[in-house]
Image (tube, rainbow, N blue to C red; front, side, top):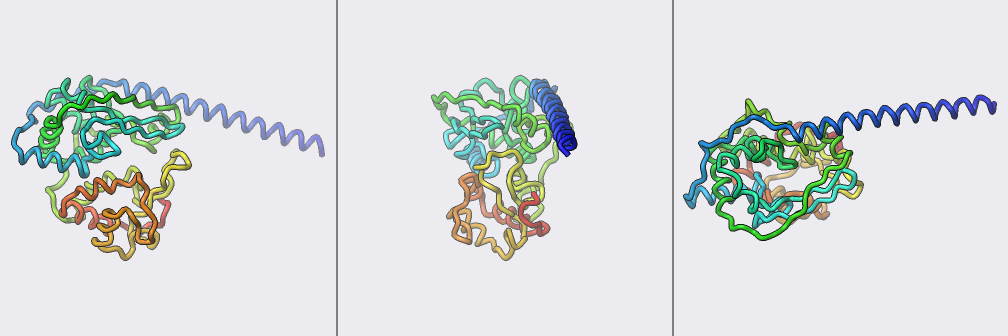
Length: 303
């Protein structure tokens, strides 16, 4: 019996070693692929036809977009003054820092800023990281011009920000598709899809809701984010399931976003972008809610 137990023990050790070696090789390959990808220089010309405007109406439209679903000026991004500084500590994934873009923009032409919005490419042709380009690069050329015009109108901010550091686990999760860090790799540079004209419909809301899927999952049913630290808030179910938005009205939705308190009396996690949704206009909020209403009913946690 002791011999058999010894053999079983040795067998378990061998299996553990094999799994460790295979896992280590997999991680090494993914980390190297990530490092090579973020250093890739994309050949995409600046969009020089899209130039800033000094028209107050255009700038006002850009300010609205930056505060709503484009999200540049949200507190969890570059901030109301675009001076950055927001730091997100994500444990073994890394540390994300929103930069002070008022200090970066002067080096960019309008065409390069337009390319950044559409393609997620920095001035040198390499990818930006964590900028949610794939969530809003469907906006019209006129709206891209509006965003550029607004950010150009914001006074420079004298603030020094830190830098983003991605650890090996974050690189692995990026390559697995769990966390979109390497932005340009996810953009179809030769065929960017353009969204429809604004309307209070589920069709338009589907495009706005691109900003929800990163947290709530492909099926919008929430659940723990893969690889997130245990203390990270767990996204809720946004589908019409009993564990989600079943029976909700637009008024319910708007009230929760305005107060930050769920219908059961619990406070929404600070991670939830209520600031962005509250900044949307009536058409955008109606469109977003119409889309969420149209989703298949999916149980919580099936992301």
